[in-house]
Length: 121
View 1 (cartoon, helix red, strand yellow):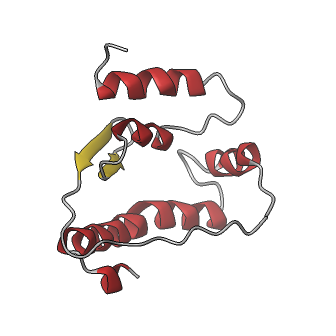
View 2: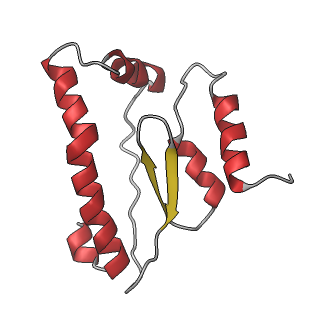
């Protein structure tokens, strides 16, 4: 297709909106292929920045715990607390997915860029 990566991402997102799960924009990072990226969201705009990896290769272990989940139910639960938290649980989710997540992501990004696997966890 003759599209920019951003165009592909937007096209995929519009298609995803037609599905019951309405997952959002994170899956669109796949448009960058094997290039590592940092995606940020400010409430309106999704930012995408390349990550420069250094150091030794990182190895991942992916495990299927054979658990059941319903993406639709998970997202409905999350969306019920946005944009305004209605109870203490929703306030906790806002903190977890907001300032706490930004701090953890900032530390993880620094470790990735330094090639510091142990700091990454």
